[in-house]
Image 1 (cartoon, rainbow, N blue to C red):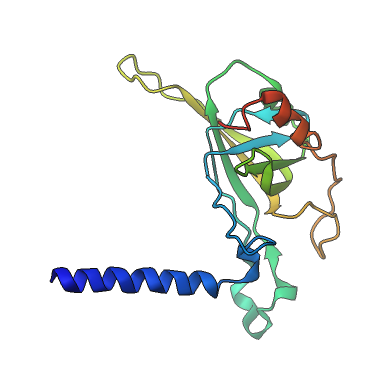
Image 2 (cartoon, helix red, strand yellow):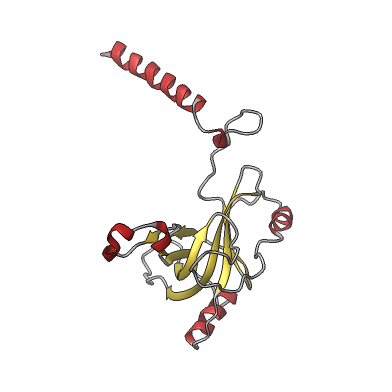
Amino acid sequence: MRGMSHGLARWSGAALLVGLACAPHSLWGTEGAPVAPLLTHRFLVAFDGVPEIAAAAVRGLESESLVSAESGPAALPENAVLKPVHLVIARPLQPPDALWDWRLAVLEGKNDLRNGRIAVLGPEGSAAVSFYIRSAWPFKWVWPDLDANDPRPAVEEIHFLALAVGTTPPSGKSGKEPQPPIVKDPFRDLDEQLKKKGTSGDK
């Protein structure tokens, strides 16, 4: 049995090497070295007018097209519509700030739609992958339950509805979608911000 396990281990390692060798070129650097895996805990979040959110977690990053069940043979991409994205951003409980001011504007009936960006940081602390959030607004705010016997940090959750999320900047030219105004990139000074932190963007 030990010999069989050893053989399986050797076979698995060889299969992994073959898989990496046959991987698409996009998985490899310009000199043939594998791209370092990105870590899910190294990221920054910002919206227009909200320079940086001290987010502890982000949930709901997805892009999905919807086609009516009645479409039948016409269930084609040209007849599909984008499903609105429900994003949840969790952060440590804190006093009212620019994000809460945005929520207040929505409560007052203002159509305050904003673009945002989530930057996943690479090993050197610069943005390796960005998720661009298009035309979002905060529709729900959840505060933590208070318990004198719970030692965990207090975390609040902000729920957003967004027109779309993608890994390329919104262009305003997307077929039959509404064309909201495109705001400035809230991370236009990202690299400079990271240099000032002096911590390579670690959370």
